[in-house]
Image (cartoon, rainbow, N blue to C red; front, side):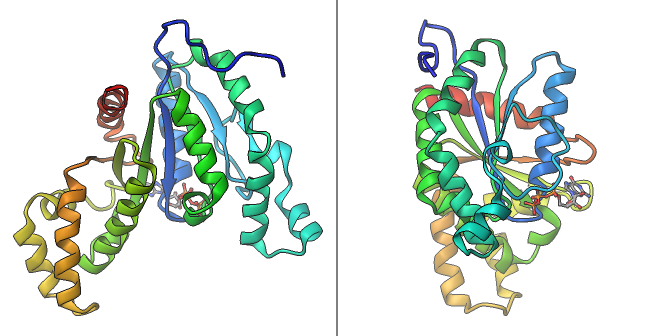
Length: 262
Ligand code: GTP
């Protein structure tokens, strides 16, 4: 390809929303929801799918890793298991990421956002060289924000909540990008408990004291670490199924994109 990289003619670049989340958190449903929301507002996004193993995408991707690599073939060819196959597919795709950037750049002036869906097995993206290369190259051209999707009903136990927050924390410090915690499935369980735990340290300590799953002294020290982490992020509650909270999410993206530009 001969196109120049993303336009730098003074125009504002569209924000990249990198969707990351544990398997089953509702990442794909969330992507479908925000994609539909932007289309309904007549401000369509550019959509990139980086999950080589997704069976059925409920939205149209402008760029789909599956058009370039077949992870089942990769598994056979390199004699790998499913995770190795997905990781190797992502690595192969990343070698062509300059072409992806060129394609995005061609459309950057006419789209509102660039939505990026990542592999269902979160660590394949967050702890791989390809994940870092993709994240860093996008972030060097576009205001890039991480949307970390959380399965709210499955994170109501204090110990589980803490583990999930520590994982999110590790991603924040690794990427150093603006970070939005998206509590999904609020049609099933409201995320109010999470907001309370994140803003009132004593309430969380009290909840922890009833949770005997982990060593409480370790948990207490870890929760102090998280206090610092919370001050660096935005929190929204959404339901990817009903669409509740999606406006709040986009407001958080706008704020985060401003932060990025500072
Ligand atoms: P992987 O492909 O394994 O990464 O899953 P994912 O994170 O992409 O999740 P997916 O969108 O496939 O959703 C997982 C399950 O959660 C599905 O059964 C969805 O219908 C359900 N789900 C997703 N979002 C919501 C929500 O807001 N509310 C409810 N009630 N269910 C949801």
